[in-house]
Image 1 (cartoon, rainbow, N blue to C red):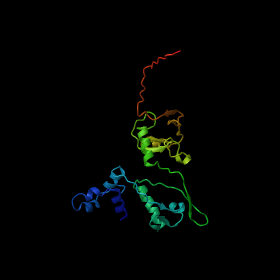
Image 2 (cartoon, one colour):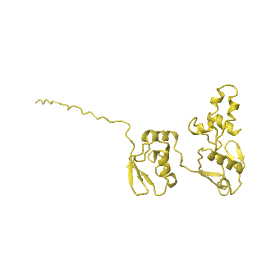
Image 3 (tube, rainbow, N blue to C red):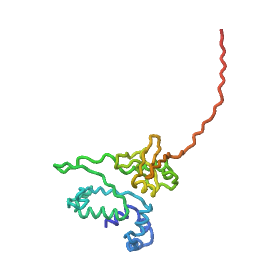
Image 4 (cartoon, rainbow, N blue to C red):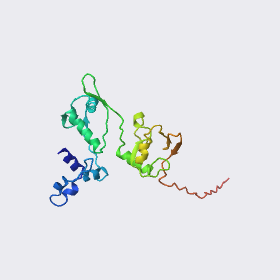
Length: 229
């Protein structure tokens, strides 16, 4: 029932419901691939009907890692068993959906939530769109592949901010490659990004110009002064 609800919210059942009678029941018997995903779910993951659903599942790190069975909580619903919460997270990862973790801090005496990470790791939609429009293609030198990921130049784990200056558009291969050992990147104040490869070579790129600034040469202005005495 929960899977059916998510599929309806994501819009993947719209085509079936708009068709002939019985199309919806036929959808439930759609063959699934080796990973257990139906054709509708694969289309959804490939951008067919991309919508974000925030579950707001709150659980302790011990419960998440399986070293404790503390109850988890879903905002607006209430407590659920730790085993069910771990299953929700595991199924989301297995389906290829993005799972974002944000640290919440609880009082050591009362257990009440008292603080939360102030920085967001995920680029907001508007900022991500701006970076994609700004960079146009992958920012890695000599790579003109289409942008697939918007990522931090200085990693978020090392304190890099989620900002336009510290953001860059990358293709999928380059984004994964820069996570390898001895790859380093740093942003410049003028929008440049300097990347150092494991061989020690450094290259600097900057966003391509989007508009051409035309400067017109104005004719000289002649002014005659008449002095009267």
